[in-house]
Image 1 (cartoon, rainbow, N blue to C red):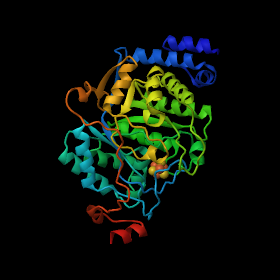
Image 2 (image 1 turned 45 degrees about the vertical axis):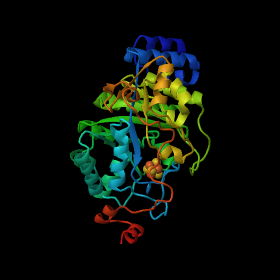
Image 3 (image 1 turned 135 degrees about the vertical axis):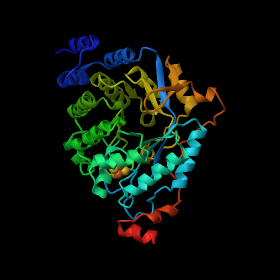
Length: 399
Ligand code: SF4
């Protein structure tokens, strides 16, 4: 089918299938792809509002046994650079987040064999006890699988226990590309196969949690595999309706074992636009300014995105791979309004919380993203000694 005919089908509100998506992705001129994605975005969001959330992207540990070859963030068990954040450190981060109007933690970390399920339960309970209204958007599917293996409990039971302790929603990390050929090449098949990732999300949705979905592209996958990834997400969304949003970003190669080069801005905008066209059952697409920078992030609003993601007071993973963009609330709002939209704060459920908070009260400007810990801080949180370590290195450290 010709590009024009497929474009007509999209304009008529019809769903496109794999071959049509591939034809568009490969052959449609970039301005046309952007226009189509923008039309679909405007149909779903006719109010001219672009949203964002104030939250904090905290990585509770960088110790990980998964060893994905695209990851510059993790440290192996026993590494002197490995860390686990203490409960008090996390409380301090929550206090700082609340001070600038933040409403949740996006809490993810490495697959640390020395943190049992009870550590997560105790942490979540402690957070909810101190901050009953504060939300925990935590633990991507591979982390849930890791906890299932570690505790020898099935995934639905792990989710049930985490929800009872205070888990509010699940971030869509660790999806990379949901095709097992790619996952094997990226050394991330072991942490979760494509089916396993989808299955955790299915269980989370059935348990009443809303989740996001992501795609990291630009490593070893083909165009067909990027589209297969999108189609798998669309199929699960048809089944459960549990995804609130989709976020895509390009692989960041610095300091990784895989190395290579980063996808271009046009590749990003085309990928975002095709995602808007394929994911016809997703309401929200985020702009990934953290990896693409503010300028491409702003352009994303003309290529299908209706959300600027997070003000993100802290970031560790993307920074480890060489990208270090920072925008505080004032800067995000400036980019939204300059693109012709109205800026509104939201929560994880995309409910509007209000106008920019810096217009309501004094909020300190944030010109640099915080890190998990200060450089050289190798302290071991006191409460860790209450939990049994599995690795020999950690047993010795905790003694
Ligand atoms: S991407 Fe996540 S699971 Fe993979 S090595 Fe990095 S921290 Fe571990």
